[in-house]
Structure formats: C-alpha cells, structure tokens
Image (cartoon, rainbow, N blue to C red; front, side, top):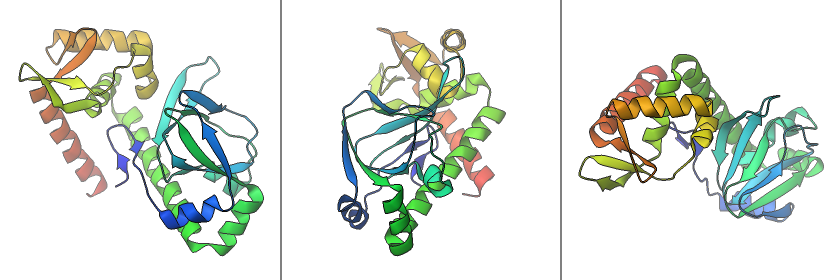
Length: 236
C-alpha cells in the first residue's frame, strides 16, 4: 500500500513514462521550501503533478483552525477531483515542505491526456482511489478514536526506531509544537498540552530537552495492536 496508515503520508510513486509524458506538455513550477503556493478557495483551473519534493494539503475553518488532510510526494496528482468535475476553486491550502517541482496542466491539456493516454488515466485514477482510502481511514480515526488515542497514534508514527535512549525510550523523528501536533490530529493546542502531561504522568512518554520520548515497550505493543486491528477491519 502507498499510504502510511499511521499518518496518511503518501509515499513516492516513480513512473518515468508518465513523468516524460507530462514534462513535454506541462508548465513547470519551482516552489521554495516552506511556501504556501495555493490557498483555500483560490481560483483553480489546473491539474498538478509532483515531480520532486513534498507537499502538505490542509483545510481551514472560519476561525482559522487548520487540519492536515494528507502529505504527498513525487508521483502524486492533486487538483484531480476539481479537474474531473470542472470545479474552478480549491477546497484545500497547499504547502511545500521542501523545495518542490510541480508540473501544472491546463484544463485543455488534462482533457487531451484523458482522451489519448492510458498511462495518464491509470495513474490519475489510482491517485484518486488511494485518496478515497485515506479519507476512509481519517473518518474512522476521528469517529472511533478519542483525541488521546489520536495523539498516541501520531507519536507512534513519528518514532525513530534507531534512536533509543537508556535502552527503553524512543525519540521522535521530528519535533513539532503542541499547536502543530494539534493540526495533524484534529485537536486544540490546549488539549494536546493536557494529554501530553497525562501521558507523561502515566510513564508512557517522557520529556528530555523539550523533546518527547515514548516508551519502547509501549510503542511495540501499540503498533502491534494497531496493525492487527487494521487487518481485521480491512481484510488485510
């Protein structure tokens, strides 16, 4: 599967035939790292393909609260639903997490490739189907998992299994503020701070140099349980 079920992070999909096809037609955009290059409800008349880099796509409510929907890498399309349904605005904001190269196809180029290229159609439909799967996972996560469990899931998916302290504590791959964690799991900063304090008091995590470490034994038990439940639920 091309989705990390712990964080709905879409892995690279390398298809050189498709990339060569698009490179001959598309406008090439170079997006610097840490740049928001599309905003929610912005005019949207194109289909986008990530040739290099990583993009994060998120929603905003009327109060400015953010919720990350998914993170895409090389080989993924976005703007696909809008292109197919001929919708002229985007419902998401898009952010380049690193220096990124994007192929931008006009609506005319999109329709031409849909009519003439099987490799284009197959790749586009595959991307759409994987996004639908990610949506199902996210609905399940929000409906059936408490904020506490969503935080635990986030901390587990962000573990660096090679970075062990004192033989029993695992460091996080990347450090995020409580606000940034809340954006990922759909919670307020205050709720995240309170839950982190609870998990620390229970001995599940500890804080060292302002970084979160999670118990190695708890991590192993949680991942095993989570993967088992995924297999039962989805017939894996």
